[in-house]
Length: 198
Length: 356
Image (tube, rainbow over all chains, first blue to last red; front, side, top):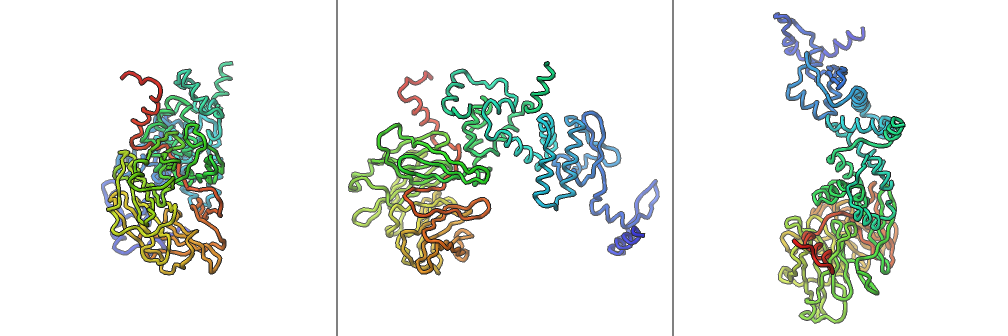
């Protein structure tokens, strides 16, 4: 009953000339298509899904709108037509399943909750990034590859906070810097210049 | 054992990040912390020391994270940060090489570079973050100008000419015959230019020790007398090297000029003074540059309020009367235009230079 009302409402929005156009080739014959579905197609079909394939060959189905909004790479692929909805999946060989799932979670949440207040979003982001360093690194690489600007900003900010106020040995450890590359004389000079940093 | 070690490490270490990503992280670090981050590794040192990075960082980080108050108090300088996340302070010695009785004054700050007037007859150009400093004598200007004793320039301004990647320091001394001699130093060429001819008419009586405000590629000074709103502001265009005038709002209440001045509030030119009738501080903000109708009045119910800058949430930060000189200073790691050659000279110093 509800669906019927919605369909009638949408039909009411459509000009009659458009209803005449609502035909679609199916199996070689022209079939009259329901106008409300054509309207949805014209609107960019938020329900349209795309397939992303992780490095472990696992397929993830996600709303096209969500990924197009966040990932510059995926947006470009869809726009230039290199992605065929019926057959293709987008292979992401440098992103593993666990990370890809997290990235999709991030994009989906931010698309559906973009009207939430700032504090709630920030709290969700903080919880989202409550991962170990390996996880953070993987997310950074994935966000960089897919060019997801807001996720990148978030991760850069987190890493920046990780080094805030830390001493040099701690920072070297965080960034896995085993060989700093300074000669003993240079290291000595640095120590003299910034004694409180060591 | 080995696995356990690996697990412990994985809790707090990132895998090796490519230099581009390290650079992007460093772009978000306030510039005052970058200096010591050069010690982390040779790679970080080269990333941070790259002049392109310094330029990029200067243009892309928000002004409030890198701004501070540069305060001269007796013989030391203090940096007071007013960033939301870090309201800290630090103290430094000006670069006078252990000379006795450092007597100096602050003339201006632009893009991380500070100009000091050093007794007896020199200017010192200094970037406190990079440590680079250079002393420039102006004693050659004196004999022909009949100056008596040591006097600070009665009018001065310091700004950046983007068209030449050069910094210009303008100084004028008022002659006892009430004439002004206006000279301009180019830091890039290290040469002096006399600007008397650039003035269409002789300078009026400007604020003693009036400090120019650098904004939109020009230096602005406020007229000393403020007897009329018309042409109350003198402007020097850095690129064209010409002078022009701009009027203050007509509603300006003619008042004592001891506490009047110009400030930069949120990127807009602001004119302030003490309003003796209402015991307020009146601040006129020119919302659109050089659009006369865009002057907006803000009244602070407080005497002796000298506005300095805006905080990140739009509050006006100011100061009361005191002996300390307070300058708004935006830190940077930017070098002076002819940095490289001079630094080699400074480092070479007393040691024999390395063979080419």
